[in-house]
Length: 340
Image 1 (cartoon, rainbow, N blue to C red):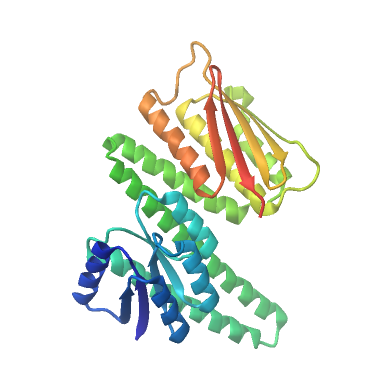
Image 2 (image 1 turned 45 degrees about the horizontal axis):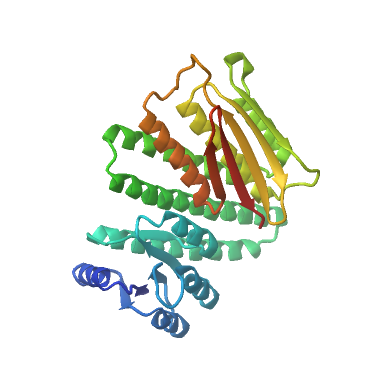
């Protein structure tokens, strides 16, 4: 029988959780507590398969609690509970603490709680199976076959991890969009936009090699189209190499800006410069506004504003500092990509 620990100091949601779990058939035992200290104690003294905690705690942050659980029991699958208006904190916690799922509070129906728990148990089973297969592969006599199996298993687990990141981010973003009460047409456009953002973030992390020259070539090929009236330039202001993971993020940020601008404005004239600071790479992007007589690709000003805001939040959600400034003839976007 699996064992699940749930830390929820918010009394109303805790009662909802208890009512749900007591009313359904389940393949796990659980303990629900309001105290993170009790959650830590349980993980220290017995095997905990899934650890669920609210990010809103009094004595410590959710990130601190999840980091402690990871140190004590790396095999325990961690799930965060959060309110839908705390997207930046949630995504930062996911990246920092390797949480597997997110439960959006309040838990109103059984599926809100049981789906993440069952998915976490399945993920734990998959990880244990992958680890067992990898150990068996290591006992093989031929290095080439062993190495191939290890590589295959590693990529299988990574692919599964990227899939769950995509699913979690979509759930958070869609919940925010639906709660905002947008017009159905605008809601559909924003969901489509976020689908693009998430898929391209994951693609940038998987497919890109982290080299400035590669990113430059890809961006120029995709977005510099002078025959169609679209111009894009990018320049690096220093000689040393950018850290590969940060270069992938810079490439993703530029694609978000370019795609959002193309969706809203249509024709574009955009120049980007990368500068090197002590603790971050500074990306400065200048986007020219339509000239007199030119029309916007998206005629509705409210939709343009919503997409621009969504682009800004998508950049900031991955722990980057983003500032947009609109001037008379251009929009300036400054992004600080922290060095790892």
